[in-house]
Image 1 (cartoon, rainbow, N blue to C red):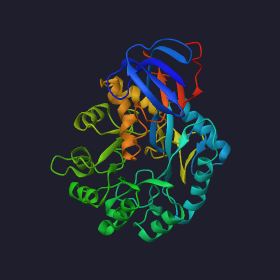
Image 2 (cartoon, helix red, strand yellow):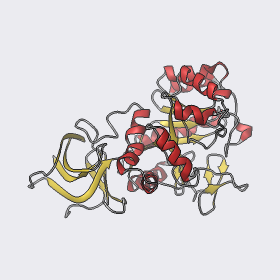
Image 3 (cartoon, rainbow, N blue to C red):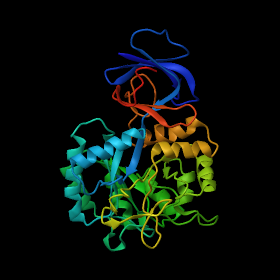
Length: 375
């Protein structure tokens, strides 16, 4: 049993308090000071927050999750963990239908491999059932939704697919959205030129998320609000955003965060050093990875960096932390994560009180990054 004394952000405004960790979960917590003694680790002014949850990660550094072995996955999981991400959804982008099985086999192997890194949660399939705003996805590989193929995939791999991004216009009759939602897969709308009405019809069918708001969708217009308008006004839809300050202008980020409380952060990180995202070639161009024609291809931001960017835009720390923890946990229905409450998993991050840089990380109550024994 370990008790941490620190400034806590559970969610809610940061306040001095303490947490007791035992058996991989938070067993108790309180506000104010705790009596010092054996088993108490005093972190001083450090701010302890829930571990970050990233629902969209294509790769890290030189590791492209579409095409790597267990050793490479371990490097990527370690890098994510050091940035404060304690669990993530590896994201597989548009590919031929027969290419998904070997990719999913590699994800399954990495998920059970163990090691001290960010936990591999369910897969995020981004494509191939995308529509009129493909972005960097190869247009020649896009196709209408195939409910029969999806059914076979889900039957063969129960519980492996957590989230799927598709476009309503690629799903005639919204048959795939209904089938996915009925099987417990979270359905996200993205890479789409759907109208506001079409997006709301998709929400009626079971869609609940909008992938990387503003990117990969038609623009907002005051007489044709489109997917952006639905994402920000329909309470059934939770938008995610890439807060690297490249994908979305700071003014648009402020508008989105002010317009709706349930907005989640994703990195959409890609393996710039590998030069690929699935079948797509990538080159680093200073501010963000791009195709040769300048099209953005994911980001290099960490969730910790995204949190700092949101705070630097003028939002309270607790709001930024919630966007990286509580909101994504809610999207996946994982209410044992994303909160510093008794009964929650003891996946924690200690942030420097001034810089908000990661000082230490706990996963399942074990200190896996940082050395605070003398704190």
